[in-house]
Image (cartoon, rainbow, N blue to C red; front, side):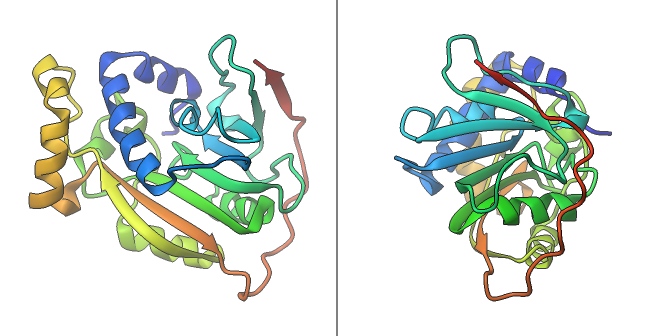
Length: 236
């Protein structure tokens, strides 16, 4: 079952979601410490994470795939959110310097077509950062969170999918060793769980992260599918 934007918004509005976002933002900013002057696109439910680069990027857009429903930036935030079909993104070729895919790949109706479109709109020297539920972690099996919906991945599966989509992985990471619990003692102990899990059970993280670049020397991807749906955009 696909997670929708309403479920994700409710989750990130909770104490558990706030702690989860904080843990993941620490890993994301360690991989992308700056996006100054760059164009950044988030696909999936990316608003809790795009805030890392919102003030420094020249353009910051959050795109929610149509099957997830519409999502909006918080009031007063001068950025753009839009909804579109995942296999026909409403952007020109080579538009973005960086693309963050979170709560997107696992919920894709066709992951290969989504990656084909990401390849098209990403600049040749651009970077893609994927956050996906880990098939071996317990978060992938808790449907009270957005990570428990859609298709989880192992590290090998994600690598093969990206290679088939003409991407080359350059860095890997993981996060969310804390249990998906709402207990305050667990939430307060999140940093301890992260440190201990990384050291003792690295393969059991809740999510895996992969930073990839375009393999521009591989065969060109097939032509994108015909656009079927109008794009709904809203400037917050």
